[in-house]
Image (tube, rainbow, N blue to C red; front, top):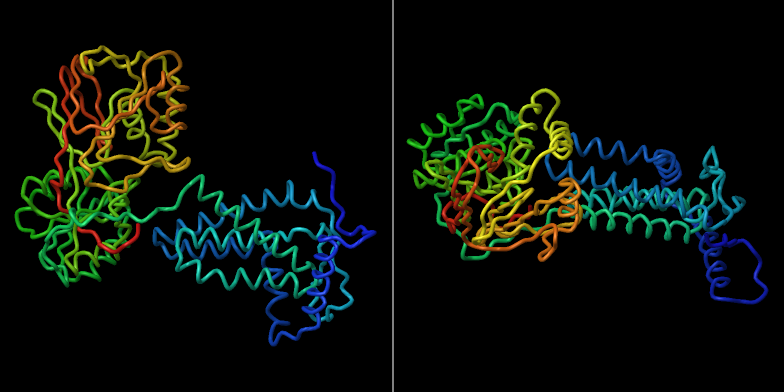
Length: 497
């Protein structure tokens, strides 16, 4: 461990650090002498309110109460950034530099805090937390960042105003906090813009008030507020709510009278709607509502406002679909298809999700599947018999993004993203290594390739196959092929997901 640095020690000769500390002291004196109109009532209270992050937790709670996906993500990212910054300050920052707090004599009594901090001065933990939270929020949502930034700046300024920090303490803390926010983004990236090329745009009817849109809603999706908001934005749209088991029939009936087929639910519900829309040649309007909404979010539709804007203005794109076939069994998917351990994970998750919730059920399913004593799947690929723990096929290329699951930036690239985790000992280690490494090729444990068509033979009877959250059984030969730009979907063309 490096020795502590005492910034209060007297220097025997002028040095850059000495001159910097002298400038810091003069700036502190100038701030103490400066009269800030109206600040006496506001800044000390704001400074106290930010103790232990209380102000930022309250702000995050208020943002989450707005109940928009972007606001919730911004709140979570802000708190995650704050947590990283606080960890850095408390484990290294305060201990590596021993700097005494400023002398309070120049600071008017009315400004001083009733309880003075006893920790070292460098860097400012309040400034770090404020900058981390504001930067994290802004990286996810610039609009919310603009709201939070003045408050964060005021908290940082209050630390000099009340006399508990030198200006350099605040600047260093703010830099550390902003760095923490960017580190969090590196690990869990924000949702980057999804921009489709001109070739994917589609001509669709503009429905200013929603007339001709029939929206089928899966009641189990838990999006009643979102559906009501969509109904208010498109008052002439027809909204049909039904139980999960009745979604397929409701969509088939809706397709017979709709100009635009709409669906609200998770990826499995959207998959059902896509098949019916393809069969009837209808454009599809997707309102995300469920545990998993990968297609809608990759498409760039986060909530009812995005969808209503696209429907009103007649903005849409063409996206790829994928068809799989095995004997008499045939289906279409928009996201992913997999064989091996994942279909079993889906089965366990589905069985437990209604009892303990989707995320908890997913964790339980992963633990059960990875700890089970099983044999790898065996298939014939390119004339070679291969043992596989997992075969993943994505509709479009999934890009590696930090520790977060991959996502697609182009839903009409014409490619299948095929990932394989080879069979062998210890499937859990191989699967985790593949997930951490991303789409590596040529590894002894996993490989990746991008193709337009895939053919598997020698699949054992009853082998489970999962696609878009649904599970079926296949045997013998399985073919997977792209349907380029087969589906037309409403999407605001200038939006950022």
